[in-house]
Image (cartoon, rainbow, N blue to C red; front, top):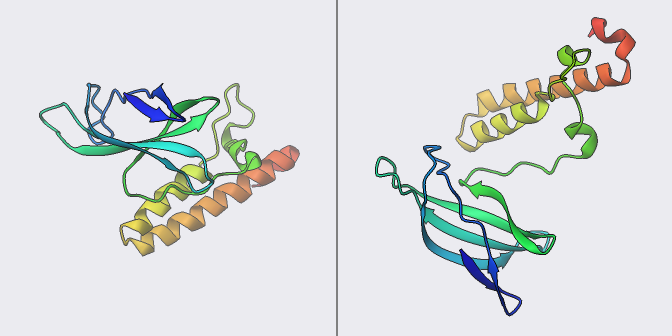
Amino acid sequence: MITHYQNTNRQVQDPNNCPHGHVTNTPHNRWQMVSKDTDNTPMVLSAWTCANNQCNKLFICQHNWINGQFSFVRFLNGLPKGPDWPTPILELKDGKSMNTENPVPSKCIRTYLQSLEAEHHGLDELAGMGYRKAIEYLVKDWAIKNNPDKGKNY
């Protein structure tokens, strides 16, 4: 897809799959617009229709201006985005995998985002339990990272 930005036509990568059915295809572009993100970063929002005749659903893509080009950021599905995580949380590993060859990322972020989605759908009881579990993962993985010799006690 081509979009006009800063008096120049810019190439924006077309999506090659549908976020609803997760089927690879060549979606049909319906519209696009250049706007600004909450932190004033230029972005392109574009609406697409899935080309799979079993789906045909509409979805929206967000591309942000990064390093002189528009790069895909995410599909906008109406759900909350969640926070921008600080590096120490992003780098946490699951305490059970700390001493393995390939440590697994902490379950904190994934659990938090699932809880956020549950809350968005009105499932406040499930969301509350999920937020509590996300905090447990965060505290446990942080404690193991900072006190690896006491990892068995957590």
